[in-house]
Amino acid sequence: MKKSGAIKKGLGAIMKDTKTIENETNITDLMTDKNRLLSERQTAKILNVSFETLRQSIRSKGKIQYYKINSKVMFRVNDILDYLDRCKVEPKN
Image 1 (cartoon, rainbow, N blue to C red):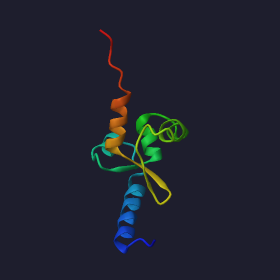
Image 2 (tube, rainbow, N blue to C red):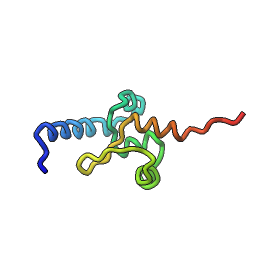
Image 3 (tube, one colour):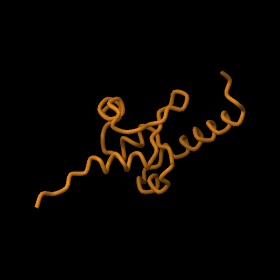
Image 4 (cartoon, one colour):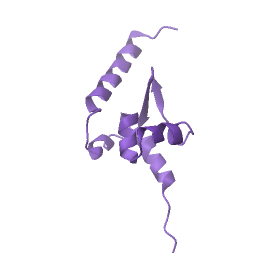
């Protein structure tokens, strides 16, 4: 099945945006847009885990939703925040 020109153009824009923000170090800037897609490395940095831990223990076990665009795995900021909420442990009284 062939991808339409509009889809290819849209995917190209997403990949370009990803490359532009790949080297951003300010996590707050990355987290402002809840629909922004982040790379595996950016997501690992936000979660304070290694790239391998993200792949093996989190992503592969279905603990966090992700998107696969061509061969690139991306995480939506809102899905990362949902995962963090599920990890929260309330203090005992």
